[in-house]
Amino acid sequence: MIDTEKPGSGEIVLEASRENGGVKICVYERGEGGERTLRPYENVAVDWPQIDVIRHEIITLLNRANRRAKVTAEILDGLKRSGQVLFDLLIPSKAREKISATDARHLVLYVDDKLVHIPWELLFDGKQFF
Image (cartoon, rainbow, N blue to C red; front, side):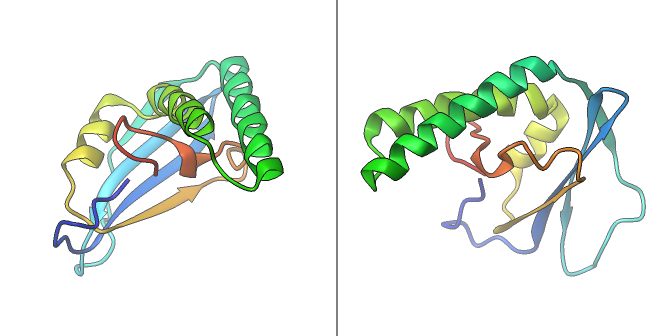
């Protein structure tokens, strides 16, 4: 998700927690100045059955890659499609803007235990995976 070609500094942090049937997302940059005391959160209404369908698609694709000991172009395209759907379902617009505009070199992901079943590292923004 982070462009390693750019001479960025610091980190971009994504925090995700499950609340009231949806997801609360916060994205902010953390530089050498340390943590921010106030963080802007956005709430996303989530279609959990659709998340489960996409999650199972990703598991199936990864299992196919493991059996063949390589990732084919077809599998990679499937992972990109599924990752894009997850990105669109889970990441709200302001958070997307911050992610696409950052020059940070590292992504730090904080996910509460109610969301660890989601393959966050495979969210795809149209250019690259998290």
